[in-house]
Length: 117
Image (cartoon, rainbow, N blue to C red; front, side, top):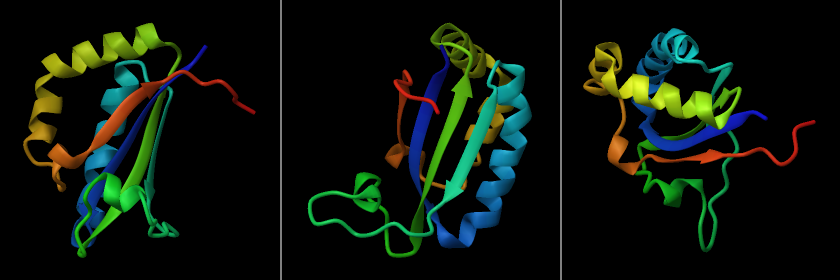
């Protein structure tokens, strides 16, 4: 069964194109490491909540918006191997040194699909 890594991050609105470019550069690397699909979504209709919401989750500032993304892998084993390779790959480190957002506020996790229609 497939496996999904999900991410939510606050990105300065002014960095939209820089973020898109960074994500586009990362796609071939993730695919090289075993990913089958990479999706990056710029917030369009993200309501403010009373108790919690996407913006609160990443402590988004007034000049930031939320990006919701996910990476699909054929299995958790492939994802785990990919993560190990990424940690050692100098191309990933180089990208990490110039992220157009505050990585400390990114939330992420691995998920096993329970429904995929």
